[in-house]
Length: 424
Ligand code: NAD
Image (cartoon, rainbow, N blue to C red; front, side, top):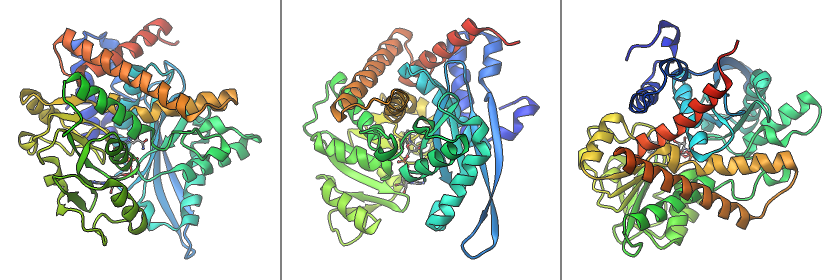
């Protein structure tokens, strides 16, 4: 891929994937060439050094990023990731996907993403707090409920959001709950936020099965990733009556074609933080094997670029609901399309998290809080409507759901840019 020299620092396989998807959609919708140039790159990219005094006394410096891809439709919104693979390019790709995701769901946000290159498991709780507070203060001029609103992602959680909210609030001198979402209920978090991404994936899985005339009885599911998203999907689909036959985390998977007892697996995982503890409920499989088991629904809910041209021909599922961001490469997409696998793409499938984050932000700004039932009902209405709109558009355009979702999201952003014009 050829980039203008000025953005070569973003070069990274995940950014290449995001830009290639954007280029394909832009071409299909005949997007204005000037807008294409602008939307291929993020509006703002901030790189910060985060010096932390470690518990043993020495200072260690971590690299942090916050990328705001587009601000035309409102403040930017996106997760914060703590992971050793975080780079500026990967963060920029994730920020771009957030722009399309928010626009597709009709939320008044642009896309952003943040990250720190760190393995949080190697830090003590006090080191993690110092890292988070220093990161927040370094990016503070770019943050705010009307500017940019972080949320949890891989390696971060409600406690980390609470430290960011506290750091920001101390700087401005009063409590600002709307500066982050996914925070604890006691400081303005929302009911239903913790499992919102998993709940949205569950709503979409049921909607997709209904649309494809597949009954739940006998339908099976395999889930890669057993973190916030994957474990919630496992629990909610199990409760909905699907047979969850395989789950995995970074160390490998657990497989039982008759179905895994998910409540027991969850309890054991919670206690021992491993899938293969005392529990004897299935066989050990690798992550690669999990992707290719004979199953109705596959939910990749771990990291990007897991389904590639190497394993795509071996996949045996009917439906893929992308919980992770960017789990499928462009080459794999094409193979799966030819093999008749319906893919509900990431920017639609995992939008439950940002939809309930939007609810949290609205509740914080209005200081008026909703019930769990209200939240679940509104989430289901928004996400299933986005699914049906995207499906209808993909049929109308004779294209994949991924392209239809991207084109719909990009169209909303393009209209906002056209209406606002080019400043100055
Ligand atoms: P998490 O950190 O809670 O869990 C990640 C899981 O993936 C863990 O079980 C980990 O062991 C596993 N994993 C890591 N590397 C792996 C590998 N190479 N192979 C297999 N498994 C691996 O993160 P999360 O919040 O559950 O996010 C998972 C995915 O969903 C990410 O791609 C994230 O961007 C996306 N996502 C999350 C949210 C959210 O609300 N948390 C919203 C939208 C999208």
